[in-house]
Image (tube, rainbow, N blue to C red; front, top):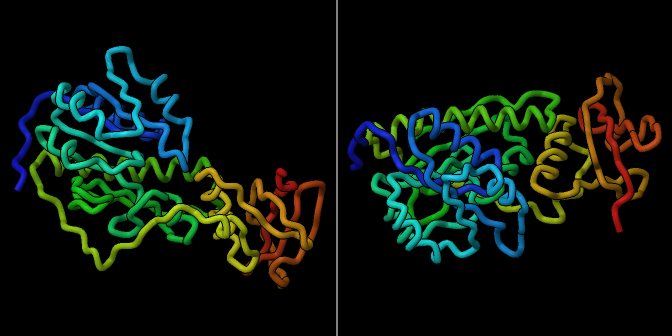
Length: 291
């Protein structure tokens, strides 16, 4: 069982690919008096390249090491030379091998944006797409597999009605901050964490092309959430209006007490339609698909 960690500034290396995740950990490290000695980032695998690592490079202060890699095993010697006390990951697409997890003096933790063991894997937007009613986040100790280590803390908050990308960001940040604060307190206290129940596990797979095409026969709030989830994950949501497949740019819930067949066009002004869904009406902005 891990022992309590002595007080004093710790040397911490983070692994991030999204800027908000880097800032979240960096702010926690600074606020708690530790040293953020390095960040490891990546453009990601060739099948899912991301430019966000460039912003992390720009955000890093001059005294902080920045390691950009697509082959984490190649940086083992460099990480050993840094002599970190703790490794912290939040949005990093590669599994850290055992030879890296053995490097930090006190261990490695991962901040995962779902309530594990549900939705292990690379797509934090899948719970939103599936209609899960809460934002959730888990801080857990890391082991040899993705998102399977003992849980130190979890935090959740309700997904608001009439969700917007801004409200999504606030909800994800609140859940992550809560799990990070509570989980790191448990980590410093030397708690081993709660073993995950694999029987309750599910996998958050990337969205398939078929999931980009949204159906009108769903509740209005769910349609809006699916539109936002796809866009945040870099996909273009699509809908069919009057037999034509279009790119869905925005969807909002419209108050309507009438009874209409899902998919019925109730009104149109330029690129804005009002469309009936399973439980009401949504206003959508839709444009032709790019060739």
